[in-house]
Amino acid sequence: MNLQQIRYLCAVVDHGLNVSVAADALFTSQPGISKQIRQLEEELGVPIFIRQGKRLTALTEGGEVIVATARRALQELNNLKRVGAEFKAEDVGTLAIATTHTQARYVLPPVLKRFADKYPRVRLLLHQGNPIQVAEQTARAEVDVGIATEALADFPELVTLPCYTWNRCVLVPKGHPLTREKTLTLEALARYPIVTYDFSFTGRSQINAAFGAKGLTPNVVLTALDADVIKTYVELGLGIGIVAQMAYDAARDRQFEKLGANHLFAPSTTRLALRRGVYSRGFVYEFITLFAPQFDRAAIEAALRGDADQYEL
Image (cartoon, rainbow, N blue to C red; front, side, top):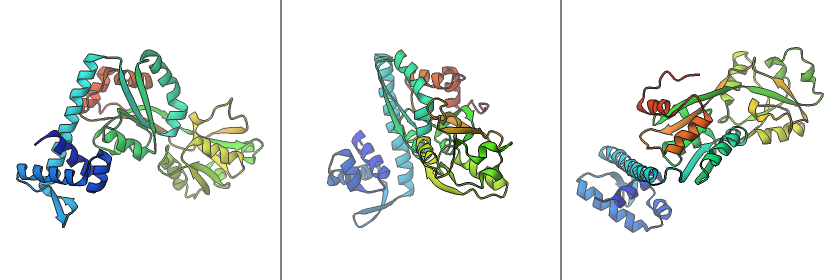
């Protein structure tokens, strides 16, 4: 048994049991991977895959356990590398963050500026995606930290920290009839076409829930992945926009009237996620504290040990 076999095994599973795709991803040959996996099965004395001819169709019961063990072995190997890097140079390395557009565009810039000033030799990698993609990348340990409002808490392999709560606002063109409403209501919003987030994004579930509780069906005419696109189409007159409050900038968005909507929608909580069992460099802890000052290193480590059920906003 060798490390190459373990890596090949996990890669094949990660690529949907497609050996050819796994080989391309690893810049090696399909026969080479197949041979290594056969040798691993022979050494262990257990078939890992169910096969139909040359095609892999599923993991055997024993294969499920073997793959889970192989993943833990690779994770611990990566932890060893991280420990070595930590003690070799505490302020050199890479901080990879997966997050959504709203966080990357409106929340993270000042945090990352302070981090970069403190750790100029740490390279920053920012991966943008929807909340499911953020959670999956974090769960696979492809990034150090995941930040999103939806999905993270649904992944048992992740430890999540509630960072802050926020709500929404309504953006309308200057002079829009809604600006003359004495009290903004969901019934009033439902009378107009709405431009808002895609179903998987930025607390969209809270918007749906609010209208549903009133027996209303909002006239959502366009959904987008980020607030900047939503604002573009509101400006074009396609509808009114429902966006996260942090996405409104009074200086840049002077073409809109901002209508408060805290009383209409339940607040959402943005969470930060770490992969269980992954060793984090010291500067990762520092970034988390910059993003969510209520969590120092001791609190983060307590959460990773499972002692942080009390952490709620």
